[in-house]
Length: 327
Ligand code: NAX
Image 1: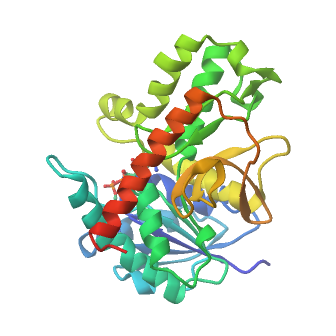
Image 2: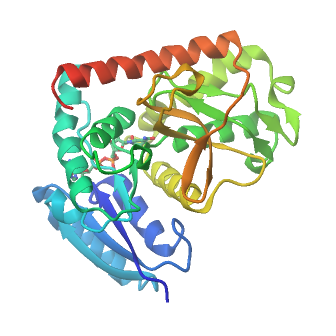
């Protein structure tokens, strides 16, 4: 039998954690042949709730579950981690300035980066879900100098999946008929959902939808979907976010399908004018456990302006993090 993969999940007692853990242990993330050893990290006051979730995981009698350990100490939680899902973060509270938000999250992602550096497995793959996800991933990566930077990623797969669903609905097609959609930039309202390269059953999406719909409906609906979910549900996206985290890691490990790409925020190598080192969303393929940025795409002027706007927000966040002494 295959040796268990060690999967560390932070914020395990939160609402995304509750939707995520059962799917991981069902085999949806790493495949049905890989047993899972869970290491859960929570703040001390939420450890008891995480223990309750662990009781329910036991009660599922999942054949792949090889064990669960719960910690309130990052060093212990990331010991031996092959996959690290960084979900727990400090949310923006009313009246909080960006500097306060970044400082609070620096206090979480700096020690977690250090803990990953100290104890994670050599092949560790890190996905940051907790917001501001791109910059939290940047902070963690900066504090893990011995881990290749490309192992630190942030989640824009939920945005990507939202874009697929919107385009499929508009064109009366199935999500599986769509290829080559891209989310660029930051996981925030400035993100750019780009369908200029997308096809629906091989037909360019831009020939199937009108430009006004793209500008006035598609882009804002995808970029502001999180707020719409909060308004409708009374709490933020949870199961769909967990599903996107499963998709992100599954793609990373198993690869993208032939003739398609997906979106992930990865460390920029300077492609498409995105400053080297920023964690920014790109069109990406995965193969052999590594992401590659899709090269050579033609970027029209409108796309260029939107990408630049989102990337400049990431530059501001990075500069603020440096000014605050968080890296
Ligand atoms: P919850 O508030 O339900 O859960 C967060 C959990 O994290 C809590 O149990 C809390 O105790 C724990 N936590 C806080 N600090 C911690 C630390 N230092 N170590 C370990 N655990 C810690 O939030 P939830 O709805 O689960 O969302 C989690 C994060 O995902 C938030 O930052 C949220 O903004 C972000 N999201 C990111 C998305 C994305 O697409 N990248 C979409 C969904 C979601 O909004």
